[in-house]
Image (cartoon, rainbow, N blue to C red; front, side):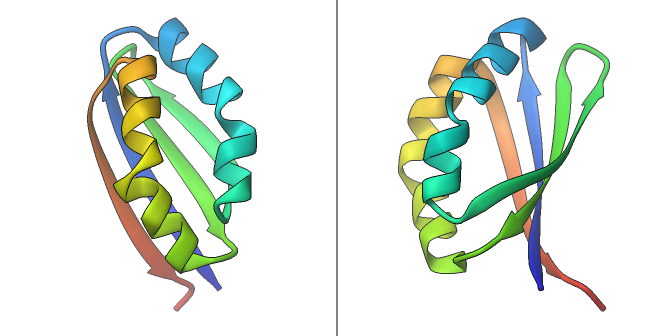
Length: 85
């Protein structure tokens, strides 16, 4: 089972959350299913995703996620693909 842990750095949580919720269908169409979302203060968000299709998910992160990041006010994002040990 492959999952992905994402860390987003942002300036405004409300702006991020609005864009994040609007992007749910696009993420889902690209093999990413949200399992959990955590907020750390106002500038950091962590997300855990189930990965249904790693190839599509990585392609999304390399392309369309850039549009999401600009709309959501994300200044940096890190993605870690992990598997259950």
